[in-house]
Every structure is written in C-alpha cells, then in structure tokens.
Length: 399
Ligand code: NIG
Ligand code: FE
Image (tube, rainbow, N blue to C red):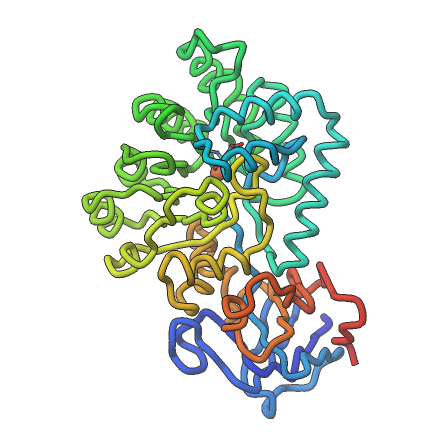
C-alpha cells in the first residue's frame, strides 16, 4: 500500500468540527495529511507528519475538501444563450425552454452527449469539484432517459431519474398519459440506472399530486426522492419533500415562514442554487433565514443550459456569501459537507480520518479568497480518492 504525504498546507479546512480550531470548518494551520488507499489515513500538524512513500508539497497553500455539487443536469445538447439575453432584457423565465433542450438532446448522438458532459465535468474538476450529482430529464422518452442515465452513470454514482422534468410535446394534451409512462415503463427502465428520483414540482411544471405519484412509484422501485421546488413561486415543494422524507429540496427561492419552520423540523437539506437565481434574475434564496432557523443548507450549481450554465462551485460560494447572506464559513461548508448531506454521503465533503481523499488545493493562503476574489481561478490541483483529477500546468506539487 502506497502512502502519500501532502505537506506544507498553510491552512487546512477539514469541515470536521472535532479537528483543528473546533469551528464548523475544523481549521488547521501548517498541516499535513496522509493518503492511503484513496482515503485520509492521517491528519495533523506538519511537524508531526509520519514518513510516507511519496511526498507532495502544497507550498503553504490552502487545502479544502473537494466541492460536492449535489444538483446538476450535466447531460444535454445545445445551448440557450438567446433566452438568457432575452431575460436580461426583461423576459421572465417560465421553464418553457426545456423543450428546446429536449429536442437538441434527442437529436444528439450518445457520443456527442458523452463528450459534452465530460467537457463540463472537466471544467468542474478544474474549479475544485470532486463529486457531482447528474440528473436525466432532457430525454423524456424511455430510450432517451435511459441513454442520459447511462452517460451520467459513467461519470458518477450519483445519478437521478428526472423523467418528470417537463411534459414532452408529444404528450402536450395528455398529462396523465405521460405520467403513466413515467411511473410505468420509463421508471422500470431507468430505476436500475439511478440512485435518486426527482420531479420539477412548481408553477407551470408538475403539481403536488403529480409529484407525489411519481416519487411514490420511484420509492417503490428503490429510488430515494429529492425535489425541485419553490423555484418559480410559493408552493407545495418544501411541504411535500418533508412529508415524503426527501433527501433534499432544491431551489427554495420562494419560501413562506411555514416552509422554513417545516424544513427546520426535518432532516431535509435545502439546496440553494444561486446560479439559477442569477441567470433567471430571480430574487436570491434567503440562506440567512434558513440557517438562522437551523436548516441544513447545501450550495450547488444546477448546471444546465436553461437557468444556470455554470460549472463553478467557487462562484456559488461567492454568490452565497454576497447575495444570500451566508458567512464565508457557512458557504464553504454548504458547498462541501452540505452537498454531502444532500447526497447522504458521510465520507465526502470533509477531510477527517477515514474520509475520501477528495480535496482541492487553492493557490491562496485562506479559504476566504473563494468569496473575496470571485471569478479568479484559484484551483492549483484537484484530487479524487487521492488521484489527480486536475492540476494546473506547472503547479509542481510533487517533490
Ligand atoms: O433546475 N427548474 C427546472 N429545471 C432546471 C432548468 C431546466 C431548463 O430550463 O432547461 C433548473 O433550473
Ligand atoms: Fe435543476
């Protein structure tokens, strides 16, 4: 077994409150960690670091847990920059554009879908992401949803069946027929390829009753529910997510006081997607209100061609801080440990003993730079299970 020592860490963010300064981020200065078998085998002060087979030097940089992007729609074809431009000129977002991406995605070859998703995943690695959830939802036929989940499954174990993303045009006048398809043959074909099931439950999308039906069928097929809710309007998303024990309810842009209380009394994670609020010129979800009420908050990109063509978790952290009133520590925690909780994964999003060696080396002395220098490419290297997924040319971590 080869042990790799990553030393010379100026600031180590462990996201483990039992370590370092005892804060939620578990900060340690002048730290080192040892990686064995893809996991963290030792963590502590640099001067106490044990010998190892191989040594890497962070050169005084900051190391954080790799970002956990727990909500993306990475597999699609085409782009919709014209809609973005129209929104910036005053048009509202309605979800109607999903049909355009469905058309482009159906027309694309599997090779094209694979290449597009892989390119976006490479961008994510370059901005420090080590775990990504990927939803289907731009196929909306049995064969196309299967195709999307197969492409997604080659990139991540965190795959989500989102057959109820929109009503496809061939079912425009037959909602029940489409839901029969989703809950019947589509689910049967997709369930073996997915871990999670999701529904777009919102104004102009699927109703509470429809979402309940799809997620109940999905649960019976072994999938765990999560939900798009409260993005476009006040509505039933949060209530339903709590009622059915969803892992997460995502967007949460429009929440009543009762929604906040309901979330606070549950284990459901509120996943906030500032990229979508940015790109649809919506009000930003109020993370401060959720955090003050005791809700667990995650940040994710929602990467998709309609509402958030964004792969950068550092940008989500910066927006979370500036626009959603999070502290820097809260935003970084939400982008790592919070995402891990939204995916019910205990071994990622932190860098304590036994955690996955999923980590990001930042070319700065403190994690605060993630929000303090928005738009700056700070990532020197990204390691997944101890293996380099991205390294900036000339970074020279090896020695
Ligand atoms: O999370 N809200 C629903 N789905 C996506 C957007 C889909 C699209 O416009 O293509 C979202 O924002
Ligand atoms: Fe989404």
